[in-house]
Amino acid sequence: MKNIALLFITSLLISNMSLASNSNADVILGEWLSQEKDGKISIFKQGDKYYGKISWGKTPGKKDTNNPDTKLKNRDLLGLVILQDFKFTGSTWEEGKIYDPKSGKTYDCILKVKDNNKILEIRGYVGVPMFGRTATWTRP
Image (cartoon, rainbow, N blue to C red; front, side, top):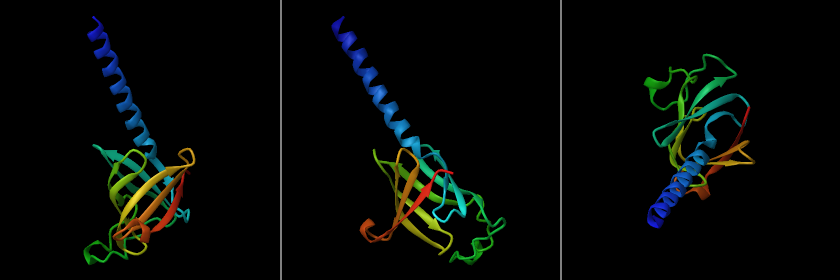
């Protein structure tokens, strides 16, 4: 009887830890306002990875004119997925990429939520994070 109770308590603790970890990972979900306040990015989850797409912009109908691929220069920025393949590591979202439509470049990226889920730090870099640049998005 003691073994059954111990097994039950252990499985309950493990499932609660898993739920806490998943809910902590999902704090990034939702709308974020870009640093320049000229666009909103909606972060969503597919499977165990996180993505973000442009959900609003100050200039409706704007195209991806800075894309180095000439076939993509005429696509709309609205709805464009600019954050791809992020995995939650316990405190940050890593191993993903960010596409910057202003430069047409794609960077490795680390995301970190701060200030009670009100600020999102985006660290884009090439090679090593130390040599990157950080932007700050906020909740609208």
